[in-house]
Picture: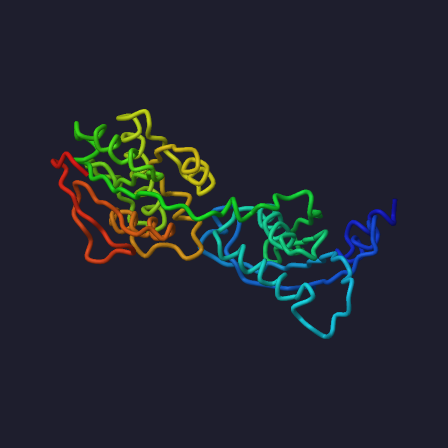
Length: 307
């Protein structure tokens, strides 16, 4: 029992050696790699960074021929640090477990990698280190990540309140869906003013929730419209022909490089969202255009029938 406890807290390199099965494998390791990042599910962890420590061991199949001192023939340490940096840059995460899974998955996409041990610890949440450790083998993760991240070309449409309430809405959706591209609607806040707090972070959340209330109003106007709040939901919906209405809170608050536009500048905020899809343009119906936007905007009156 004492050896099992010692091994449970040992470095992933020792865990890898102790649990080796059908080898022999070579191992590369990354020890005590510390980065400052915003992560965590608690409100106190939002808007601040904390130190996160990574210890990673990757088991790789030995090369069958000579290395010839050629870096292109081996699994470089850079691939491990790039996997960490890439996942941290993708989006703000709440859970170390999610981050560990994604880092392991990215590492195991490398042809030489067979098994990954990933330990991640928060160093600033208490007197000790708080963390998780996972072990993943190549057969345990989805190897076809390229299909999951296939670039889609959605149609982004912002609807002003006049457009949301328009009797022409159903016809617009008919014409837009007939184009065969995934369709995502964005809206702003309803005309009724939201509560005002004078507190910047609280007000931002209130204003985002006001937009989400209006998203549900739009969804109630046509059963084809489904409110979605995460990129996972959006990706699934677009691949399955579902018309989406964007509820912005989670994506905005979890963005690593978040929008400069505030929720009250709803068209500019929607344009930022459109830019995350590398959208060619965003159609704006029944609302004014901002001075600046992250993507080209095309304006249309809420009285116009054809699109």
